[in-house]
Image 1: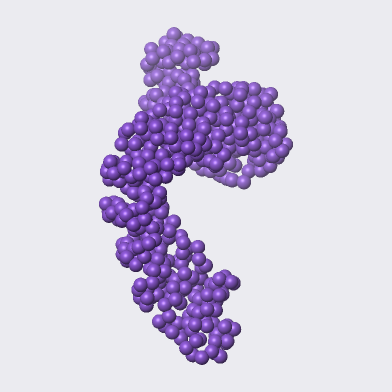
Image 2 (image 1 turned 120 degrees about the vertical axis):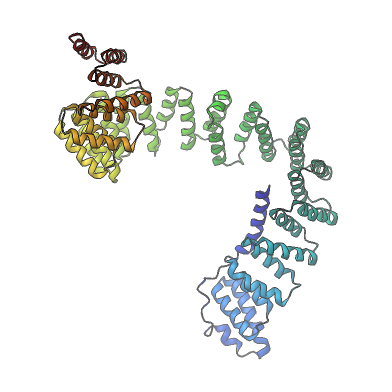
Length: 580
């Protein structure tokens, strides 16, 4: 509650901040100002009044704070005890309260009973968070102007901010004694009473509100929230029912009721009221999006309430068919539910939009690649490039389609090179050169691959993918093993828990004859691997064989066969054991 009351303090402080601003550079000289020249023709006692009036008129009619400040400066030269001028100067400098406060203090020093000056200084203190000083000012203001209810609320908020809730309640009690029940004052007091656990008094306050204002639904919401705070849920629901009877479509009532169900863990009613809130036109779409993201952030909640959540996002998608943020939320929901075809159809329906989002194509391509639909990948990369011909990502995706699905490595290289020409960052250039290197390996062009790898490392020496792949291919061909050793070590330092990199590192060490080190690293790789890679089992078997642990070597080779490794290669290794 303290945050909401400080919000009230902050709001009151903005009254002065809406005034004109005077530059910190000071006002320009006023000697040549027409008003200053005209003032010379007035009798001396009247010059200050004339200039003060001109300064006010200028502020109100022409909005030139620099000129007004200069004119007020001339007034103070003639009469340094002119309190209204100090007050107006404080107004001019209100957006920089520290600069305005000395003027405001001077005005009050010269006229200590002026409630306008007190109010101004109190608001400036609030603007600088000088709450102790503001408290003193508002206490004085309350004595001088006891007929203004706002001063009671501000003073109560200051007491609460200072950690004196009972003083705040006492101030609000005084306000109610003087003015009777005021909805805003009573609501604030009720919340303070709840905060200090004076539940009976809070309940009495809430009941008095409904008795005095029986046709205001918000008062029954206040009563419901009070009952909820003290755990009397059935009475809270009765109060909510009365509020809804008075105002069936009142958003405030629904929001409070929705929060009530959330706190009670009543997911069914929580989501039911949420659906009604989603239908409300006075709630911003951004709020609905944030709400949906929040309730779907928990996988357990998502699974337990899938059908109601499905209704929420379906309604939102139907009402906002052209908002791509909703399309993405709905698409993600469909993917989470396993309905990839539904998600694909959703995104494909937006391909023909007059200005389709690039994410339409990336989402389609991600799903089509996952489903291994090469024809669709080719089709939608072509369509994407028609819409976004300067986007390197779509040339990359087209190249990957040729690489993975069509094994057209020459064609893939052409697309990767097109992407390279459009790339603007060194990090992406490095990635593309690494991809070109891997592609050249598939073309069995080792030197060409190494050339690409070296170019990639020039753009990003810490590209762990290149470091890993370059070192692995070198080790496979027993070439430059000392270089492979350094690169594989660095790759593992950059990504220490990557099982693929650990496998490469172990394999390089194996090639260098450092079998025990290779064994330790391969054990780590197997422990971390989640993919069940057949190659890791094969390599571990080879390392164990080199360490003369033939029994376990055979065990891991057979595991590699089970995982899908080439049986002929496994048989060759088994024959080595049999001949010994």
